[in-house]
Length: 113
Image (cartoon, rainbow, N blue to C red; front, top):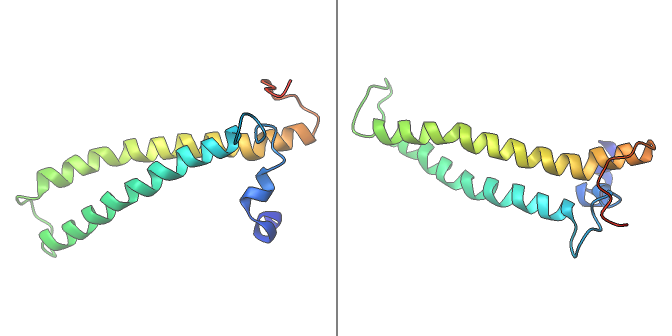
């Protein structure tokens, strides 16, 4: 963790086994596939929070906004699951494989050969 604070996550992940694959590397692609939807999905959640604060009274009771709020609440776990899965893929490619390779443990698919 100290190393990441000193130079940033990109420099720490650069020696990863999957970073030099294809033009930009699996690490870079997995990071973008994780960050773009996560960032984009944060905007609707801000809207939902603002709408809930505006449309629900201090004592929350069902009203006309309730069905829409329930629909958004059903989407939340799906969003969190996808964010977790893609974040885990990035973490594995960037950090776990690097650690395993430095420890001398094979990780499987070596695309460089």
